[in-house]
Image (cartoon, rainbow, N blue to C red; front, side):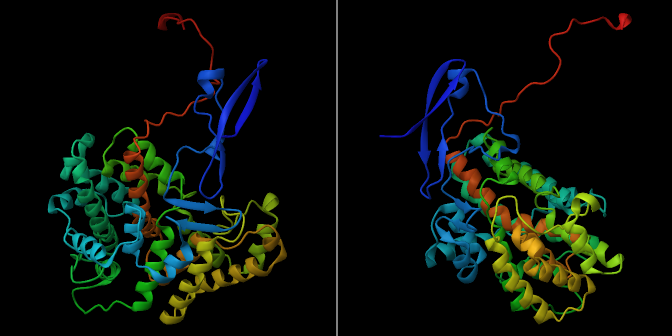
Length: 428
């Protein structure tokens, strides 16, 4: 017999069913709360609210566990390619060799972006933030590829998924190349997904560019770690926008905009900016460690440490730390900013203040270090995050459509003025 929870309010007792997920997460089903009681719940930031059922990603912040479709993030980062993980998230299973070959070849055939979109791109200021450009260009794709409008041709969904996975890296490199004053590179379909992206980013027409396998592997791991993270701000945005039957491009564009915020995907950019500020102030790591310990007095906050969900070590950070070490060792980067980062990392891993509060370096800390080492400007960091998160957004949008979830419509507690009499303008 199913368990239930009882709520007593205004002298009446109501019963609500409970449910349990496959990993033993428990919930009260209050779908009929307002209908039965006239009350709604107030949950600022939705910290205690399950807005949906999902079979995509399991996250246990207390235990430091992250799984995609039942596979541990540790296994996937060590053994899979990013496109394998993308297929897993979107379609529910790891691909067979034949399925992977078909999937990868389809992406290769759609990397080229419609030249008409370049006209739109050229209308942006040279110094436009690449996340604003990316969100706008993805939204514009719904005009160039309108078949999915209003869900009229669901059989085209796979084609739109392929187009987004193939074209987002191409669009992203346009912004980078333009900011550098370099000519844009067309994709090379003889290259794999990540080497193709790196070639579009860094190749110059005056010399041959060779993809460093250490760099390609680090980026592969980084994209896998970013691929999905349950119902975070941007993912919830994708699902909420998609619940109105908005097309895939519009929904993903909304997710990109949500990711842009400094409290979400912009955090790795803030890490580097913090390190730059420490360097400009003389580079005294111990000074800023003490300032962080006395944050209530100093107002200084260490970016890239701790996590809203993980109350233990971020499992992604353990993996990406090795990738960061490998990249720094291979490239032999001599950068004072990265030396400051190493000093902060050492303090956080060994200082009792940080250890006792579990303020460990998180994925944003290490991803910023890798991007910095690769020479990627800070305003492109969140764009790389978006490329990694794209499969998760698509999977969540697809699941939401397939399970026919109702349009999202949160409630509120109104705190404004009560009914007032209108006064004509001449009497005010």
